[in-house]
Image 1: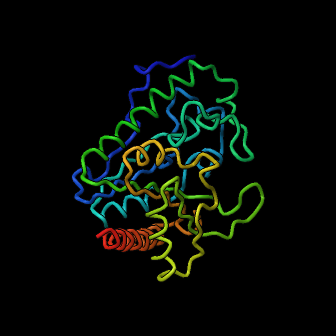
Image 2: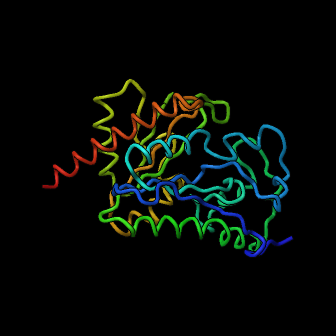
Image 3: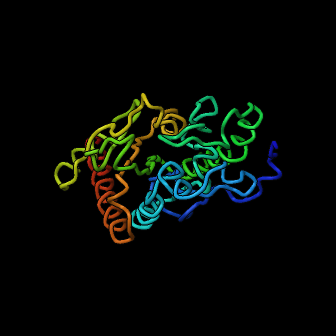
Length: 254
């Protein structure tokens, strides 16, 4: 049954620290594994409903801590990316994936364009309107999107621990990589474990590129942020890198 916008009345995003004074706008597109009741769990059951295919485990917690440390606004989705991936445009098959890694998603099989459009309008559009509003509310904004990734993908272990991703503008990624190199024992890589060719920088391309504002997509391997203590430690580290990188960029432009 096609759900209309009127049926989808739950809050689909949250804004944390809306009065933040930092120019940084934090975004977490995959913050929640929640599937609204009308979607009947998309035909899924068991652990898959809380696995990495449904959301980015640990990403919201790290982003919330970073919001506090940096005094930055955070816009986070409250809907599972299996219902609609807010980091994908309507034209992308992955916006409503029929298969995610090794899992078939029965509730997304053979969706009509009308259903895909309804989900886009109900979940993606309000979320991105909130992101745009947050960026418009600060002077000289800096966009930072927060994600996590699974340590094993399609059976292959991943050695990278933190990925710093960029679209066409690498300014902030370059500065953060330089900062990270001086301060971390983690394995930090550019455009890993994904890159722009995989379509993962959609939010950056949608909001940062048109206004030529610095941006970065941060990916953290989710086993490193599995509990509150490690989430807090990671947030402190990433917030420090960001602050130092932004200071470095500001000094270079003067």
